[in-house]
Every structure is written in structure tokens, then in C-alpha cells.
Length: 566
Image 1 (spheres, one colour):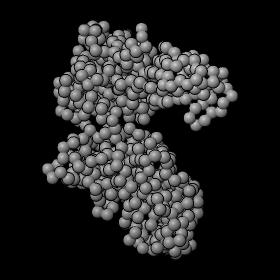
Image 2 (cartoon, one colour; image 1 turned 180 degrees about the vertical axis):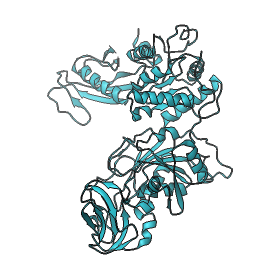
Image 3 (tube, rainbow, N blue to C red; image 1 turned 60 degrees about the vertical axis):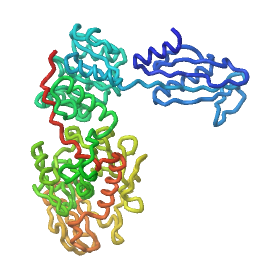
Image 4 (cartoon, rainbow, N blue to C red; image 1 turned 90 degrees about the horizontal axis):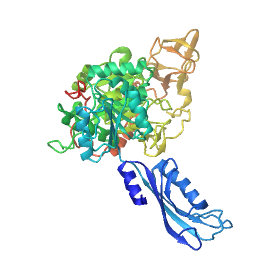
């Protein structure tokens, strides 16, 4: 088989490979022209001259295959020469030089269809017409026949789900970028278990909401982590009202494209006036992890700019600026900041009611599991834990994080600077925010001394709550037998809720030396600046997001997704 015929065959099979070509040869060299194919396992076909030069270029070729980036190389074939920026000297006596180009061929996004019934048959036909390679697997030989799936890269038959997936993995068909679609005739649960053991970023499963809840609970019981389960899209597909296998196939492939391309999947149609999205009750959806005072500032800014916003919090928040933090709704049942009201929500019905009334739903969900359920256009990590607690790129079309602990371009799409100073609110699209200094921002000349930490562990008893005007040395609270004194004159701007169990060193309050009690009910300048940064980042990451119709609500699932039968 000629080299080009082999390359064509590899491309047809959707296999990764590198084509290495001699692009220049000067003086004495092993070859003046030549090409070779290199596979990820080191197997090669053809030659570019052999010897040390070929060995080095193949080593670099494997690195290129791993990174997915093509590259040019230059070598001086003289052991006595010195390496330069343009050419590396290698231990050869030829004396000439050679230049190579390593061209990496990346496999096209592919589908693995677990189950060969009606829906996956329709999906295979649609995928083929759009240039998506696919592999089909089923325990029934007649269902995965060549007559039924003539365009498949492979048709796998096995005794059970584990057998099918093992064969697919052994043959190299399941990779991180493969989209897995589960629509079997009677073993979706075992197929889902097998799928979750792969690295695939997209796992879709056909089924009703009831079936999905049962299977997800089962997967949790079998030890699959919430992070792993967040890859599962089920009921599968976008909410298009699909009923027939062909219609469901359109919704499924549309969702796969949406997830792969990290876009919102919203309509591109402009509103009647061509501007805005109408009321915030119908705007694109953003989910914010955290509902403390800074997060609340972000939420207010997004809501006032036309977005629907839902907040996720721990069940018992330990916020100190409770009067300007939506998190306090989980403790008291009521929270309002600058006229915007928050409500506690635990189910879909409550969520829809909150949005309909223009309120902010706050959901007890420390692990962020509702993000996958809600499918927002953007997820914002506003926990301010100084470390990443599970937020990652891909969990929404745009992922933004506040402060240290994240790196834009790596685990999130953008980072917002939270350190007070000239860069506060800056949008960072590459790299991290400033490191945590451990020193609070300065207000009226006071920094660390205005913040109060628990001197001991225990349950706090509060004597001077938020808005109280206090003098330096005045008793603000008590933990056990230990009094907590005001560090300076001013107004108590933050105080952890009375009766809260605290640990030694936990931040429990702060005193504002400016002495203006009205600040206790107004979003801070820092929160506004950070909120502005989030809004800017969101608009940059999702161009035109506010020019179209409302963002997605939670998918209700296709009416035809009761299960797959052949």
C-alpha cells in the first residue's frame, strides 16, 4: 500500500496520525526528499532518512500528536556545531542540514452509539450526512448488521454492555472527545455505568425523567462521583418538541454540537425591536455558585442587565454581611437587597415561580449539581474560597470565576480580579488573578484590624448585630467564656448569625470605621466592580447574547423519550 493510500485509509477510519515531510535538505544529508506516517503508538510507515535525525523527528512527532499541534523542525547534522534558535545540532557526521514539517491529522468528532434501535439508526443517518463518523454497538447481531448500518466505522456485537464497551476501547473507538449516546433495548443502566468509566466529556442517554432519576441514583450508589455524573445529558437532546426517531436525532445532534462548540444553543432570531431580551424573567440564564455579599453584587448586576440568575449555596451559609447577601434567605426564609428579593428553591416548580415573579432563586446545592440540570449560558464561581471547589470549563458555554484559585484558559474561561486596587474587576482571559495576600482591603485607613475572627470554637452569642454603632473595646459577641471586642470605633457592618457554631479562626464579623449604617444595606463598591467584570466577561465570551431571544430554561425532555425499542 502506498503512503498516500495508507493516509487516506487512516483518515477514512478516523484515526489520528502525523505526516512527516522533508521540506529542505542542504549539503550532505541522509535524504533530500521523503515522507513518513507516524501513529500515536509509535508505529511508522515510510522513512525520512533513518538514523538520529529520524529518531528525533519521530519523538517530536509523538509530542505533536499528543498536543494536536503541527510543527516545523530544523536540524544541523554536525556533532561539532552549536544549536541555534533556528536549528538544533545533532550527533551526526554528515555536515549538512535538514528541515521537516510534522502535519498532525486530528480525528473528526465521532459518535459511539450504544444500541442500534430506531433512534440511533436515525441518528447514524443524520450524523453521516453531516460528516460525523460513528460506531454502533449492540448485543443483537441482526441489529448491527452491515445492511442496517452501512456507513459505520465499526459494528460491534457483544454479550453485554461491559463487553461492548471493552471491545470499543480496545479498538480505539472511544476517546475523550467521543460523544456517547445510550439508547439500548433493555440495558441502559449497565451501559451508563460502562460509559461513566470512560473519559468521554459527553454522555447522552435516552429516557424519561423518572427513568433518569432512578438511574442517576443507582449510579451514585455504585460510587460514581457528582463530577462524573455531570457529564450525563439525560433526557438527551435539546427541547424541540421532538417525537419521531428522526426528530429526536436532530435534537440530540444539535445538543452534541452545542456542548462540543461551547455555545448556548439559543435562537439567533432577533426580537421585534432588534434589541434587548425583554424582562429579566425571560432573559438568558446564568447560574452563580455562592450567594455571599460579593456574589450578591454580581447577581444584582446581571439581573439588572437582563439576565435570569439562579444562585447555589451551602445549606447553612456562614456569611457575615447578611443584610446584603442573598445567602441569608436559606436561614431566615427572606432576603432582599436593593429592592431585589430572593427566595429559597428546592424544585423545578419553585424555580419557575421565582423567575416568573422576577425573584432570585437560591438553591441549597454546594456541589453545583443543578448547573447540569439548568443548562445555563454561563456559570459563575463566586464562592471566593481561594481555591477551585469543582468548577470547570465546559460545564456551561461560558465559565467565569472570581479571584485566586483559578486559571483562565485552563479550568475556567475567564477570571475576575477581586483584589482591591487599580485592577479590581479586571477581566482575565489567560492565567490567574493576583495571589491571595491574606490582607483585607483598606477602608478609611484600616485593613486587617477591622476584620474579626473567632478567638475560640463554639456557638456565638451576639450582642451588637449589624448596623450597631460601637466603640473600640466594646463587647460585640461572646463564644463560650470569651468576649469578642470591637477593634475600633465604627458601625458593625458584618456579623455572623447569632447561634452559629464557629471554629477558631473563622471570620465572624467586621467593623466599618466610616460609621455610616446605610452602607449595611447597599451593595459595596467592590461587589459592583466585580459584578461589572463578570458582565463584561460574559458579553465577551458570548457575543450577541443580549441581542437574541431568551436563554434556555431547563429542558423538559422529548416526549418520545420513554425508552428505546427496536
